[in-house]
Length: 514
Image (cartoon, rainbow, N blue to C red; front, side, top):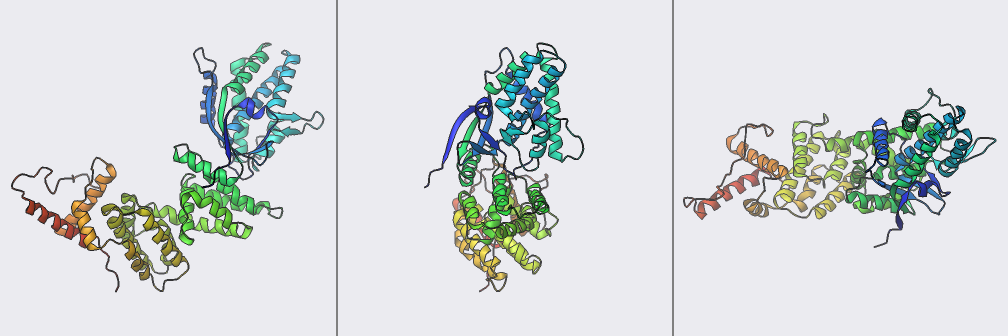
């Protein structure tokens, strides 16, 4: 197994921006989006550092950087926090400017302003007032940041995009908080300098530096598995858009692609996107495990045409994926919704790639066949996953193989898809044996729902009546006593178990074509 090329260290804000390095938010990374809620949380953390029994330092979480050299770094995760810190410094410079204009210790405050500007914002050319910045924002935010915020120019209020408005508001919000904190007197510059010096030394990150996107993706997956929420969605977007973006790419074309991307992410949510991408990919290609997904995409999607095609297909399939995860989606009829509800109840995801491929291929062309496939998958999942507890990876491989055949139009009829499920369909003998000895701990809410479902289906079979599974008027009871009395001899218990197993076998059954 190859080792991951990355370094980890703890760094203060002073160590990050006060050392001559340049940081860049990739062009297609998310826009600045923090609001007053996040600003206030951060400000309260800062104020806590100055309380009598406050923290000596404050941890700001992970910062993931990518660099091929030691001078310039791309911010892969943490750009919202770094941008906000930069705005706080700029707000402090803005207040120093006001103090200088008001003739309040102007000489010392000018020195303070120059020092903070050079240390944390960047060198400002005294003639052109063009900055050599320590921080560059993305393609939607950098113009406003460099043109207005860095030189402390008058901030426009019209003609701004949503994220530029947020940058403008953030600057005003923090400038007001700083003014309240340090005042507007001859001693305010000294107080402000103390505030900034404490801020840059007491706030620190865990900085992870990687050498390329593949290592960054692996870091994201590793940290996410440990409960640290980092979004690999931005990483995937940056890669795809870097392939698409060339000197010949028109701005309107990029805007259209970004709108398409945002539509997908808005529909699914940033955290759900990587799982959707894997389901989509496996619906058209040989099975790829989660850990190899980004590497595979980077290897296969290496031209503009391929990246364009992938984005178009993702846009089309995102709604299908969202519907497959929502049995109440208006796309489904009653029978389809019930099958999807069962898959959700069983916590089974392995068939999603196959179902996506079948939806694309058959849903409009042969709706009845798609409904039958969906019902067959629910039956297989009940037998294979819920009752027999067989290995999901083997099942997923078969589903992926079937998905590829569906996409390639290798089947002459949809019913061949159902027939292909034989390999993961436990036979009646195996199912009956497993069912008769199956135990569920009903302290688990998922298990309780599954047991309720099983008993409802058996009762419907015996009585011929329909029941509302969601109704609260029904409660779970033991069909067999937990501690049987002598009247319940072994033969009677076995007879009841066999009877239930036979009913279950007839209920959850697929009649394969011969």
